[in-house]
Length: 157
Image 1 (tube, rainbow, N blue to C red):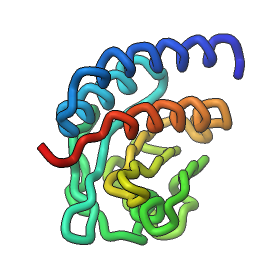
Image 2 (cartoon, rainbow, N blue to C red):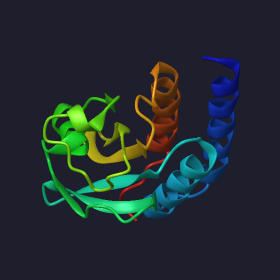
Image 3 (tube, rainbow, N blue to C red):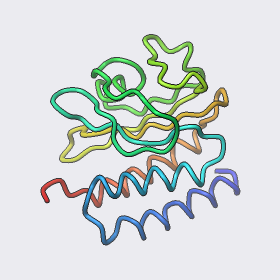
Image 4 (cartoon, helix red, strand yellow):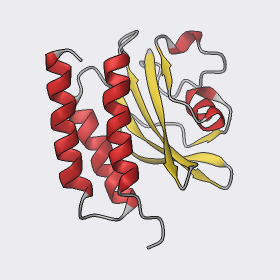
């Protein structure tokens, strides 16, 4: 990682540990996680979660403009992430087949699956108005943050 990005993701991991360590409510942690990312990472216009509910993704906590409320599995970047179980990093969303344009200002996107007991239960979706905003360093740093988040997931309250 470049020293600047490396330092940013190290700081985010420290802050994430402090946020998630003593809190078990998934929605509260998602809200703080999305705010942390949105206010720390440059050049974002949306950061938040979609949660699996009755076989489709439903809007969860986020920071940014209003968003699509429901996304079918297999549709758009978020639905593709759930269907494949793989991180989706898209340099130009306008070239992604079936892209769902919730915010016309978004040009690039990264979506990471959130797992509980090996099942995708949500996705972390991050959008940018900058083409090709996300690189290998962002993907690695965000994957570490998601792993930390998953480690603290408690679904039965």
